[in-house]
Length: 134
Image (cartoon, rainbow, N blue to C red; front, top):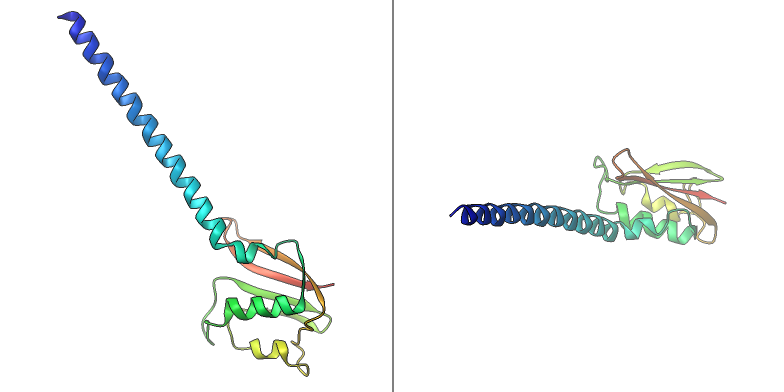
């Protein structure tokens, strides 16, 4: 009888141990999946981090990221473009046409080369992409 009680306690202890390990494994897997999902969702932006790109790439990226945000709205990711004509930050689609207007101070030469940089906040969330003309 005493052996049965000891055996039952051992089986229950093993069960609790396995449940804790399964929970730990599940949490670790969920974190890995979350990181992978974030990496996939940010891949279009991360490809500009610390890379040299053309002005055409800068304009296309800016238009793609901001075209759906109208005047008065603010996109979650802003774009800062620094050229010899000035530094401009874009948060919506109100000035995007000027990027291709050669008479505008905001004009971006499609053949110019830019250095890209992705800026993150303290929580590792992308807040801005910066392009500086070389």
